[in-house]
Length: 169
Image 1 (cartoon, one colour):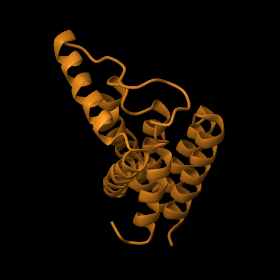
Image 2 (tube, one colour):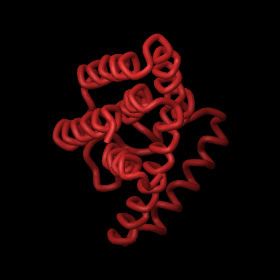
Image 3 (spheres, one colour):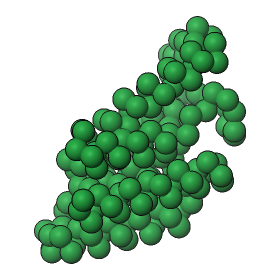
């Protein structure tokens, strides 16, 4: 397993722990991850690692920013994806993000089915889309805080990185 993959797993595990216990991914953890990613890319590719690092950091920020605007994804999750992008590079983070979103959808669906409120949540989602269309702007999607309907997305991110590390995506 490469140094970059080990570092991605390390920072993903740390983010899951802090997210589950503190309900956030601390900025100090993000900054440490960014520094580690820059160092990893520099060690692996020399000066050529700078564009790889920057591309990996900014791609998730650009792709996921709309989800943040609609309050469908937290800032900590997006910053974690940026850290992982800096460590893994553009192709690595695209694979990791793909796996994370697939796993997040599967986990969410399983959670909604097990709670018995699948129909209610789909109704809420379509009502949300209607409100956004009427107001012509994003409104917060869900309620903040620890609630049964909130999925800690750091968990599917970690699982996606584990699949990436294992060569499954």
